[in-house]
Length: 381
Image (cartoon, rainbow, N blue to C red):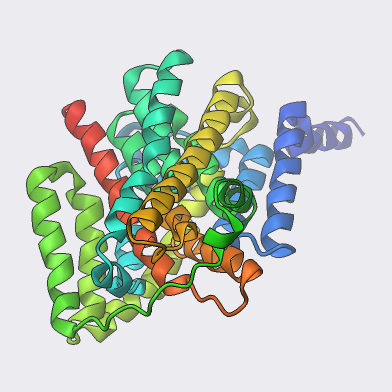
């Protein structure tokens, strides 16, 4: 009988219930909320489903993120995936897939979109100053500020390069959460700072972009940006390589692989490992609350910056630019461009802004990578 009781006691101690804290329970509930938003509401399910499931796993079985032992052995399954995030491999591969799946034509046809993409980086630099004021060191502040670009891969990449791996989980979850919540966060800001007349502006059809232009664009951008900021090579280089696969006409198989199979594999590994970095011990603290708050402020000001420059350009061009497309200057591709289209269509169902908004959207991806490169240059990384 003693043997049976001892065996049952040992089994009970091996269950998750034996070590479950109130913090773990809270994070499990948060994971359920994220799953609901992803599955029932359709908020970026390809990101939120793996992130929330990783969050669920680590708060029931912490050893799934167990630190690597000597020689890189003995770690938990998701720790191996997370190491690839820290090394910058996963974010760079995400950029490869984004480049291969995105048409840069609207940006080439309307180069003024670069200005709106740059203006939408306003939130990044305001968040940097805010993080400094809240007591973060300069490198931590830089890593946190990139959330303002609504660019998860760049946030993870910069946090790893600046040695802020202890903050990578909260930063990544905040960045991806705001990317997913673009349809909720952006419209009120867009409507607040534009007039009814501005929202109804119809833009002229974009000029056709030649094949030669589409081939030369990623090559030229790579040369110019990497010569000025060599540290951007992993992100900008992979983004432009993916786009060159798409446009050159002789690497169809590579473009399809980068867009589909490779992209989905990387999203699974990156999403679950990022979610698994949100154990209750690591996530439920004042530092995380500050990061989430700063990220929201940064994202809001990024949207504001893009819209306000859009208003300025609208006045300069005599009403030829709809300011709503400026909000797409954040890096959430193509979600932010779709939101510009949706808000514009609310005021005029015949208004088609999607392709125009893709210009600032692509420019925002490049702009956020450049902003990360500037921080790495400042800190000598």
